[in-house]
Length: 158
Ligand code: ADP
Image (cartoon, rainbow, N blue to C red; front, top):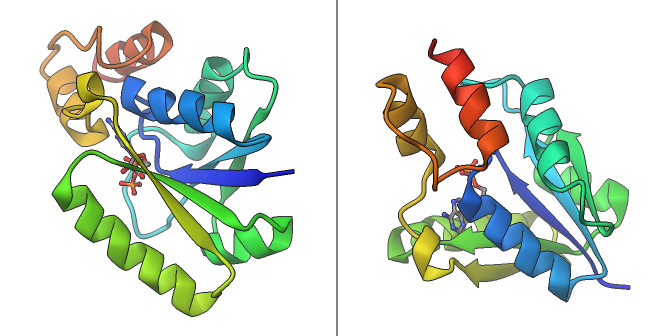
């Protein structure tokens, strides 16, 4: 049984995140999407909102679940006995950041393996922060996020 976790802020979930989730769910027997809540970070959507959106988006995938993590991801993985971490990579900038993060996680627990998945080309420009900015100016985010998220963004910036 190969069990992996895909952590992130998902503030909000984008088609880029969903692409990674779909592909990872095809590879691993079980995938836990981990919605991170970091007290130092400011989010547009609350953890409850991000979890509820994510649950709605993955409802058709039987081997994908969604959980909250408000501690160190390494502690979360140890408690759940999940040895694999999936991270999406859009380009070299993402990779250098993700590489450092994986080194830090390895230093904390050498058993944890990070699997990098490159984005599919049509999603590589998608970034939650830019999508939020676009939505704040009432720009068209269809094609970047699923309809459920587009509606939630429109409500936030009404
Ligand atoms: P963070 O909280 O680390 O900024 P996000 O919540 O934005 O990360 O994303 C979670 C994971 O999804 C990260 O590994 C990030 O690199 C990846 N990701 C985000 N957008 C995309 C995309 N368009 N294509 C592939 N991976 C992505």
